[in-house]
Image (tube, rainbow, N blue to C red; front, side, top):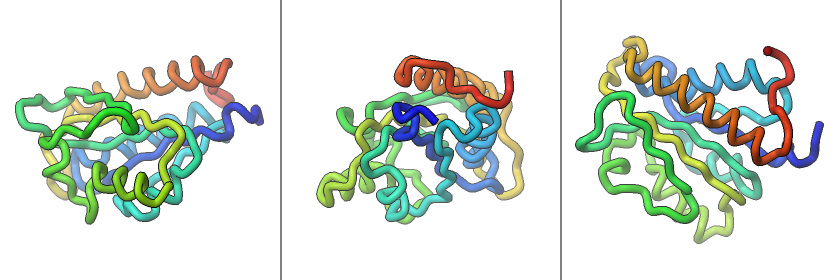
Length: 165
């Protein structure tokens, strides 16, 4: 395994069984099939303290479903999690104990931040238990998947795909 690739991780937040909240695990599964063992793909159901352990001293692409005021289902919000503040409207609807902005601040205080944190928030509309992904969210997941694959390829100097064409 290329050492330049080993410090990367893709981390998903979300719950498999709550409609659009499942977009993180859904996308992580798709990326895992394409990336094989070349990049760690870590599913986190919302345990922000574990998130600090998962991302410390790594380069991270993090995917989560969000609800943001004034945004449509399927809208994608991209942030540099280390340089840009999380919009307040993104942080008010977290179903996790700590929200992501609080986890970043906790990591900053504890010296437990990632080296790079690319956040992909996909706006959802239906977080009902047992609901499927909304079509707009599924389409957004396909776009984010391509962006992450392209980013990994660009930043690691080679194709990240190892198992599927």
